[in-house]
Amino acid sequence: MIDLHTHSLFSDGELIPSELIRRAVLYGYKAIAITDHADFTNVEHILKNVNKAKYLEEVMDIKILAGVEITHVPPTKIEKMVRLSKELGAEIIVVHGETSVEPVAPGTNNVSVELPDVDILAHPGFITIEEAEKAADNNIHLEITSRNGHNRTNGHVVRVSLETGAKCVVDTDTHSPGNLITRDTALKVAMGAGLTLEQAENVLNNSQKIVNEKYQYV
Image (cartoon, rainbow, N blue to C red; front, side):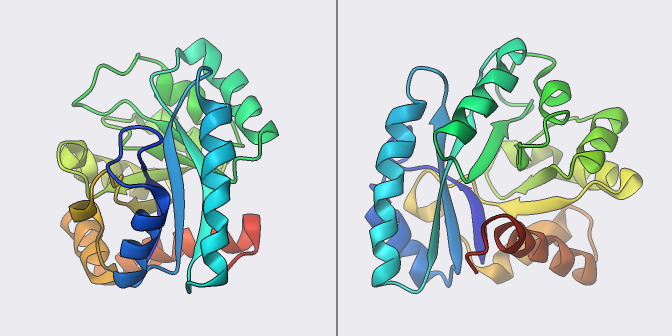
């Protein structure tokens, strides 16, 4: 299992990084990205402190990536926020997409899929064909999420991705201990969204490829 979207208590998660990572190891995780909710007010604090969790790689069989989930940043400011996050050392950049269960500003999806430094558009709700085509062109992955509420539109995300060739990943958007899942459960989430077993396996492999190609960790 590789999970590129999780939260610690540096935003609204319940666990400090060491406990989050320890629990992930017990679920069989090979790599985890801690991507706390970030905007211009806290991004330095998040990345400075999450990076400290890498000390655990010395004693646990897991790779740890420091990232951010750019959250509720006005669409006209997202590009600047992405650049700042990269400059501060973010290894994974997730943008909080236009989920159907939160008041995300319209235009967030469309701006985010035009920025090649974005890795994942999280829970993108009713993303359009045109937006998914841009995601495919810029190698931005659309998220199939196991998180309740956000997962209401997983089926739509899968249908759009299959039509456009946009790549997907399965993430947990973990906030509490019970949100972590095994690889078998991740496969079920992907298949429940409409993928075949073979397609679901390929989607899970996309997370491995992100880590391999961009960061050469795993």
